[in-house]
Image (cartoon, rainbow, N blue to C red; front, side, top):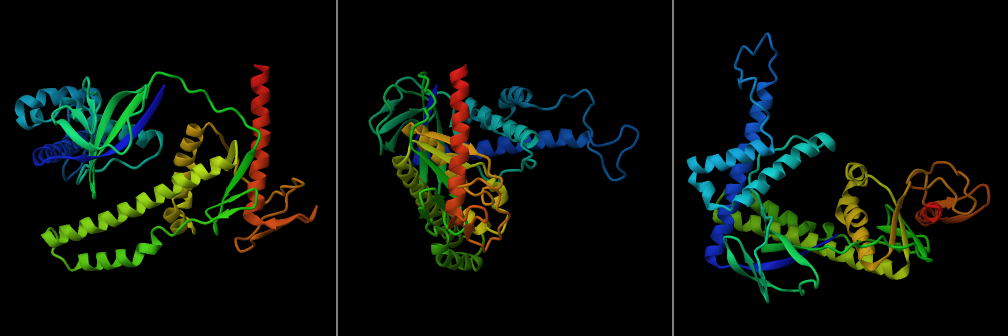
Length: 389
């Protein structure tokens, strides 16, 4: 099963904009109410059985079950009798909002994320089911909104069925995230003949085993002066005034432009790398820890985590290239020629010199060569296991 998501910019009229804004506000209220209900239940279970706080204690009956998604979804249906505003929004949209909150609680336990917070604003909502014959040339039919016009920058994929749609509010307008699904099964990309090892560097964005050092443009730092000027002007405005809102929108537009420029460069770089090789090997790095280390500004500006973990695997899958992550430990301490350990290197030591075989190379390039060697060993093991099975 293959899922593809296409993004189109919406051209909404005034009535449709009001409906979208109203839906976003009701979704925010439902999310915050459901979160408050869960927090109250958890707070009521903090008190000991034989004692309680001297100040106050929130009490919920002991036989009251935890308000999970099923219970809150049932209460949402009953709440429409008491609060008519809930009837003005598609029921499935509100259920998806409750699913988002439920996923946040599951991620909190499974991934160690923080406790969910109340939302000051919600910027998107989902229609999980599409109407019949909902696609037209330059337009899409949606529940509640009817036919909405879009900038159809690309054709709809052939052989795919529209499954769901998400409406996203950005600084530059409203966008449609249309998800298509195909029942066809896409096999894994076969191992090719030509391989490429990539090392994530400090001085350069990535280094290849062939000796190419690719530096990333300074997406954020090039526009930092303009960004600081706008934020300095914002400080002197009255919060909530029209001029304050206009400056907020200018800042958001600038951030969106930076993100779009970075993402566009990532996709072009990914296609360039796929043109060079059949197999791509990268390090299995935790980029969250990178964003908190001494190279946090460079890594966040370049978006290296987004490129390695999201964009490059997608392009490799789309182009039929083999993509594999290998062990990152000791790539700068191992000699790519003889395979022996050369000891730890300081960050300012940018040249690899092997005391065993005398091999000398730029540090990041030597690490990329080690990554390629590890990838080839892993590929040989994978091919051998498939042949035996």
